Image (cartoon, rainbow, N blue to C red; front, side, top):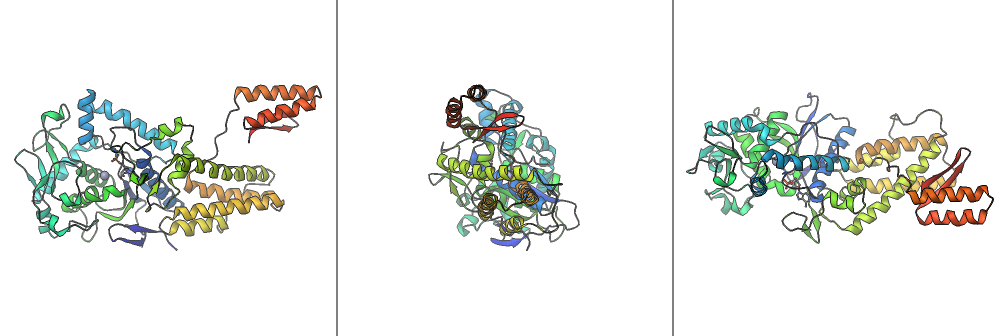
Length: 477
Ligand code: AMP
Ligand code: ZN
């Protein structure tokens, strides 16, 4: 079986195959953050999903050229720059750094390219110029440049590839100047926005005078500049399908840079939203948590990642702190099994961590789950069945060190996809270390009753003592 994914372009699950089978890598673009604030974990659900898909493609033997843009000029950013008095670069630089650090906290592999829109102004201007030459872009009275949906259609192109548009809305010919609008407000949209006093110092020179790009054209220009006019995969949250992605298709295909018969993007993949009380987690509703909020509550990045990857990417799910607690305990069961396997495998001769000739049952079951439209909830069920079965084998004493090493190897390969990593080694707190000393002293003095009492006090702190020939050490319970 091959990997299949739901392609929003055709509203069906399709086998994934590269657009250019001879190319050395798959072109993979995910719309990145708008850096006007810290990202919330709803945003990160989409980015972690993109990371999971990239990791799985790599696991299946593809090379992936992963691009994620940074939107560092756009309506909301301009408003914030004016309010804070900072320069555009100072303001967006702070949130870009924070975003990259959060991405790392959630164990997302760093995209190979992280283009910033402000570094691509010449490419954006070229693209708008090309649309103008083809008669698809026009200047409005205020000096801004708009995309004409009717002219685009007149060239034989289809507007409404990712969403089904209301026929009445399709007749309208007015314009929208903002970057966000609904399907019902369908209209010509801005490619280049003429400078207005509220823009302050944020503007660039262009053939149409001073101004700045619209949001949608930024992604068309950056993706095609790095990946070429046609590429394999384009991802984003479901809210981006319209108008952002529909407009990206219109701009990119309207410029006519693709070879005959080639689309701008072959597979469009959209991730469903993370909800809070049934509503989309969003800045405007104020119902959000940032990664930092959750770290401050004592959660780990890998626990947040586990929760964010627990549901199928096309299903919304509700975020709750209780759900995150449940993720923590599920993860500690998995960690305990992996720790036991590691101990058992320590006695095995040689390393069984390399690729076996045939995948072990855990890996075959994982592949079957993830090939099926990246069914990650099925993948977790497979992993936790394996945890139960491994625990039973460990408990019965039937697992040889080399069998344990083989299982551990399979888990490590599976985790290259899931991205949980090992449980961080926790330093014992000073109170526990003091109790360890007290207990060792009691043992040396043959006061075993006191030694046992102290052992119980340690247990209450979540630590246990492990004695060996080289001394005693603390271990997390
Ligand atoms: P933004 O920074 O607003 O441009 O959003 C960055 C990404 O996060 C986009 O792909 C959005 O579709 C996605 N996104 C925003 N809110 C949510 C949410 N509640 N759940 C999942 N993805 C989201
Ligand atoms: Zn985009």
